[in-house]
Image (cartoon, rainbow over all chains, first blue to last red; front, side, top):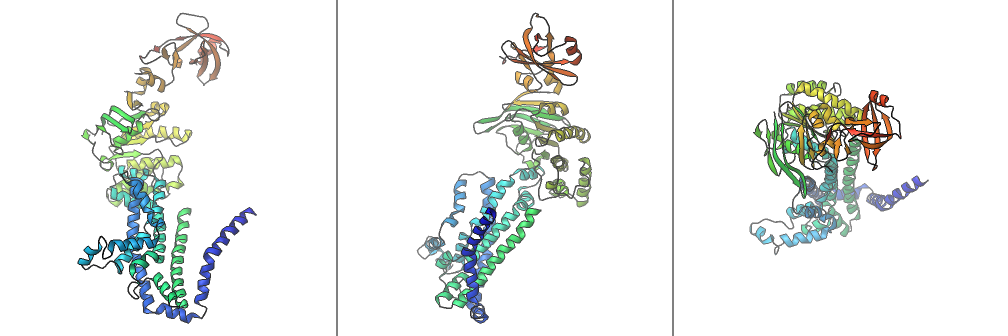
Length: 263
Length: 320
């Protein structure tokens, strides 16, 4: 009985908090048939918004993957002054509200900001353009790869790497042949979480993008715009596609994951 | 293929792991680094391999200064206590690793791996993953992997420490035989004096980061240079202010000059020998080993009072 009790509590909680709202979104989208949803999804602005979201994700994920792995290696395998600080700073984006991140970027790259003037003289647009949106997204999705990889690196220890070095492997060979294969599932998991976070980013991007339809409007911003324009079906339809993308990513993760553990 | 360690010191913070250690390891020999935990023996081995750096001093491999070389360039084989098996690779790929990173031709690698698989008696297990092997098999794989690139020296860090007693004894014997076949200069670390005595040509005894004595097993046993060596290599009793080996004690039924009165508290049959445990007048424990014939001739019993006389004793300046 106690076994079932725990399950009921866990599943019930998930149902109320997660599944309920998702189900309502699905239901409301198709309330008036498939037509309005299709119209909303095929408008050029929406297509552009999705393309922009995917583009930003495609840039932010590889950057954060490389950074996350390098950062995890530095934190676990090296000793250097300021290591504790680095370790703490990696978590900063989790603690900081994305809106604050957006405002900080504004202060840096705005016309009066530290870099803003310098960039403007050279005709480089950062704010209200792709660069600031990419930077904002990279910032908010930064911790995930490092946070997944760090415990795995600690767990596997460095004996295998030492063995590789004594067997004549260079640092580079050791990384590609020993370290990376050992942490690959942690990296995959981190990449998936990063991707999900990038797809769903709203706050920081909302501040720096200027929300110019067809130009700097991402999918999540598009949802908000449709909602404010009383096009509820459109807002729901875009939400669903976003939700499906996230669900696909998470399912992909659970499909990949167990294979590793039973091997 | 010789190893020369010259005046090596190493500190970890306030702790002196090695204090001015110098050691010669002859080409083709099998040397044990013996000492209690924290004596610096593993640190010394890791410094020879280049996995740790000495604070001062030099390492010469085959007469060439290797102090500044990375482990990658030293051409040493290293065997780890906990195997350090590459978990994501098969046994075959583990063994081939050192050859692959040296970009040897594929055919040569395949041939060498097969040769090593049979040398370490893992034929037919090449396709397995380390997780599918027993501890003893994993360590044999570790040895094959270390030997594959034909290293100048083979270094083993408590190679049998994680194995159970029976497998340990088997592998120990097998390592000695392997060394007779392969002849690679070998240094292994152990805290087990029986293991060191059994298989090595030369033993270096370390204590608190200092080298106490280097010599053949017999030399250490018969001519210990210090009280520490006498106590650590084989058993020793303190009788009066002298140290005596258990089989260098004579038991007498009557009081004689130089003999100490003691009471027998326990008798244990060890096969050919009998272990006699005694308490002297102050309750200090003395252990004597008697041959079976001698024991029976004396007709000793528990509770009996006898006189113990050292036949060969040693007094070290530091003793007492």
